[in-house]
Image (cartoon, rainbow, N blue to C red; front, top):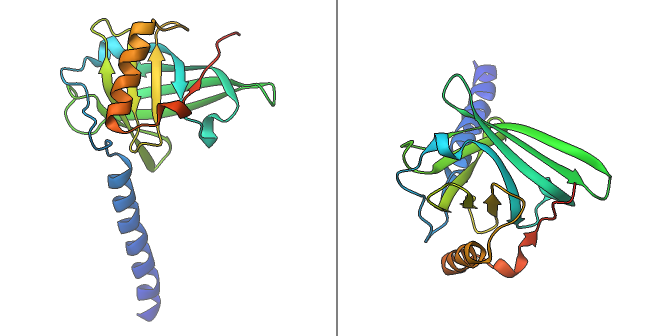
Amino acid sequence: MKTIHKIILPVSLGALGLIIFNSYSVRIPRGATAVKNFDLKKYLGRWYEIARFDYRFEKNMDNVTAEYSLNPDGTVQVRNKGYDYVKKVWNESIGEAKFVKDPKEARLKVSFFKPIWAGYNVIDIDEDYQYALVAGSSLKYLWILSRTPNIPESIRQRFLQKAKKIGYNTDELIWVKHNQ
């Protein structure tokens, strides 16, 4: 009986920790609001990463794109691709995204390493779904995306102002090169 308790307690605590971690990791930063009346079908397809904060999964990456497609079960396949200009190799990651609650609210969670999920919150998008501002679960993660490798200055300023108002330090953004 003691052996069972030695197994059940750590497994139960581990499961509880994972549940707590996952519920924390899919938050939206304070002051940010996800886009309402979101249309996933219009969002699907290829996006170019225009700007991001530096973090280890995209370290030394340029020519970064994200491709979103619908899976048969209603989840979204996320295919990220970028060129590591230091190692001189292309890297690709395939993950899955699903809505946190309502599919009309642009709050999703994404996983490239199940069972770990992270927040993916579209907090601004133009009416034609050509440019998007995406917040992670905290002020450490922010992306500016475009359907083309360039973004108009007016959209750039709109997204930067919104991000600053929420509390992002936009001076730390990396502006991604698209030359390959």
